[in-house]
Image 1 (cartoon, rainbow over the protein chains, first blue to last red):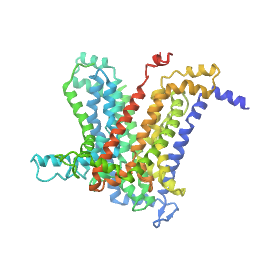
Image 2: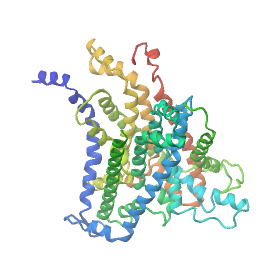
Image 3: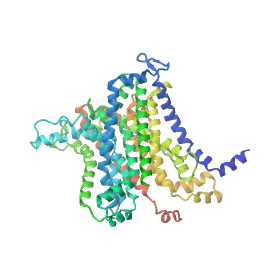
Image 4: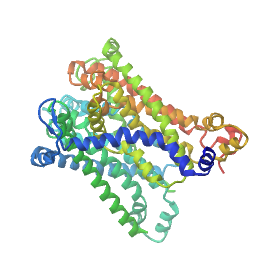
Length: 294
Length: 271
């Protein structure tokens, strides 16, 4: 029996692959899927008092969520901020990746390492450094006042949606740079040369050849920036004030001082569903777009 | 390949400035002789560093972060090494789904992971503290570690391992003598980068830590008080220098021997 099992194992690639994968799959199941399932079930419970929870099934928390204007507007604002950040990050990072992919000849890796290096320093500190820059007594305001260009500090810089957007664009840059660079670097340059030789203008070449071919990188970047920024907590908490507050700040409050775990769980579930919908829509659109190109 | 484009070059350099300058303000103001972070700089001092060193709470938080980081990086790299081997070596049904499942913790908003682990931890009646933080960090670091290791293992000639087995070496001996030396730069890079991710991680720690603060938690608590900011700047500057050094080391290791195996090991690996 053991012998046949051993012989089967020696010949079966899937059996070997899954035994190698089992620790990772067990980890993901026990530390993520089961907890997420429990979080989902908590969203159907009711908080009675500070420590007591009623475990009978109700969808009241979801009704609560959509009846509270604050929560709905925070969800909309989170999605809006996240979309703006994704768009701005892509737009600003694209030319940089284009330059490195097509103009840099030596030490491309070094350029890439330098571009992604700031990303590895503490997220909290990077966000905090924007507080130093945008604060009422911060770098921008104090410099402008010293230069005599301002009498009063610009207050809209700090504790606003703008502050959140600028900071997130800085914080997630690496997530746009890497996928964009990879997809641009894969493009066969002779295709671009051929297009130019055949009389297409620089702009036409870019619009008809380069941009479509870099689409996989663009889509990848959209997803890996949009998804985490929707749920960002640190940036809105440090720089958002009341204007730049996002849904995650409320989720934290429900698990913290407000102490309404079921409503917090429902809000987190709604955030997860939002993320899933965006992922599906973006992936589906890409599929359609790439089909049209090829 | 195009010739030259100065507009794009200037834009790229400006983008570099945008990436780097904000981070540089921390070290700059950490030597400034004032409580406010504004220009002009008033004078040079190292007293914020002395003040930082005198905080005993900071020592505790540092130690907590090191403990969590070491355990998280070792466990996640081990788990990721097996998984990376499976993806690099075998083709099997369910490959994409398994890959996606392992990558999810890296993709979904961290606050959702944190909330989910918090709910299960409290439901099980366990106490919050460094243990659930470490669990969360293992979950969060494993996809990173796996990406690094797959990049290293891909292109590895697995017939070397088969040859070793055919020549009578057992599975452990083959791993120890053949695979490990070749994977080693990738493994160390993965350990270092996972450690840094864990060391800098805030959201999971914020939800799961209870009263044992990690270093980012400590900084978070101090950031609210203007008079305490200078020593946070000093601490931040030290952390930035430290992480930059570790990350550069990891990048260097990751590329070490890549494509040069032939010279290093005296055997042909790539064709």
